[in-house]
Image (cartoon, rainbow, N blue to C red; front, side):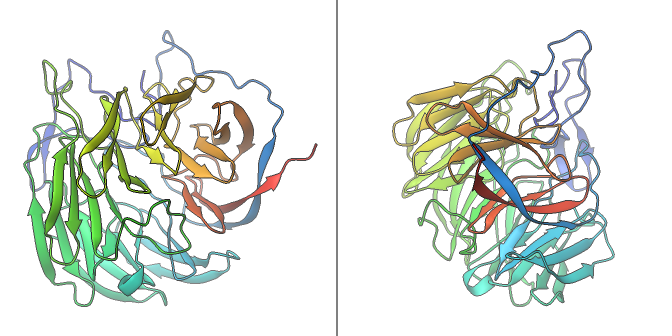
Length: 418
């Protein structure tokens, strides 16, 4: 039974994929939020039991944005980006809107007059105050903090995930497994790194990680101004120089195995997670693993039917299974710390670490706070605006959520009333 927040499995009787656009391989069109229907005869999502909250989050501000469709097959996720005191969001209709991170005050609202394929990438350092988006027609656009489009150029392919800005480059992962960089100043192509694309991949799942704005919580200082970590289909993980495309190291995090192409799917899910000197990733339906940031050498691996990107902080690595069970591991050793099963089949998002808890949202728009020590449920709130449209973003001002119903919300920690 697929859940709304996990990649939908391919039925055995279905064709393995289809050819689309410039892609000369079969692609499984899947999204982070998957399918919504469940068999009436199968297992049911867990009912929420009453809890006495010991933590709560308050809404600091909430603003209206474009409504987002329930994510269907082939659509990417939309989530906010932060740079230079602005939080910027995008919508499939082509709207790019900015708000002050501290207050929610509207700053600009730009209509690019073309459909957008994913959310926003924000810059830091040389790229501070710049924001990049990809269009559904295969273009890359750069917008500045005043809401002006600096340039728009063809990418030579299509992309389904947000770009990143690092080392004077705007970098995208194209659907044919190329990582391509364009000059931040002019939009001219600077370099391309390509790897073989497996015959069957998850559609728009693997992502890029670079250093982020100082307002975004980053549990690692291993990423320099030019560093870029790329997760790719086929369970590949690369550390690149964003300025010139030089590969510092590359590793395959798991050897795909199985009797058919579906069973051999092992794409790296989402953006690699960095904490201290460690890079942690989840390989679809296979495992979660952590690697040395300096070399890519594996530190530990845990077998898990994982369906969401891994989360890492100074102490824990948290992974969400396809059935929405949540597991926490010691970041250094990989030792299992706890498992949380009370949210079974509730279609959980990837986890984030904020304030005193680990937070996950479910398909009904509830945000759940889990104890760092035991995984016990400490908090629950109904999100203003319902289900998140993409990943939650932890900032020094609070927890940012963009919802499918058209709200951008900043939540801040508070002590629950006794």
